[in-house]
Length: 178
Image 1: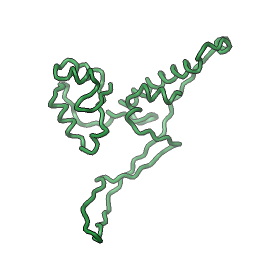
Image 2: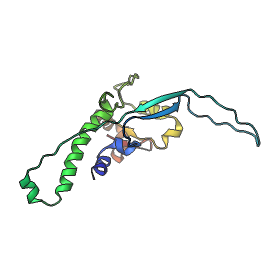
Image 3: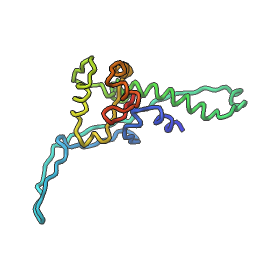
Image 4: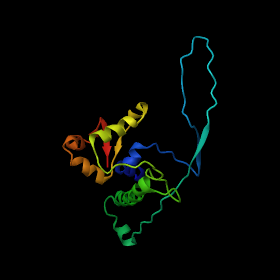
């Protein structure tokens, strides 16, 4: 129940691929990607020797403790398990949300903004967002989504050209998450 509630509450969990592990999970990736080419019938396929890089994904754990008196447990109000699951999911969600964006990678997940070296203008414009959208490789755009901070979302809502998109929850045909 808690996992279902976390997916419902968290845009990151809705968008991400979740891999359950027990410890470290290593993925060897081609630094240049995989390429394809046309080959004639019975033609030889050129062998490639890609440079591989390893990415280590570490498992982290969020802990929490819910205390409940024996009296409350004995009273057994309706849906106590659902209530406890809901407050646990809320607590986990609060910790995850901060870490998914700003996590250090030390004892917690590394956040999306950690290690970002590009500077982003504090001015939000239609052209700026179009530039961001077209900078994404077209093969990844199909499953793309926008993830905005509340501050950026409010700036977009203040611009007449974005009001309708923001109300509909779609920008450049892609869902918007805050």
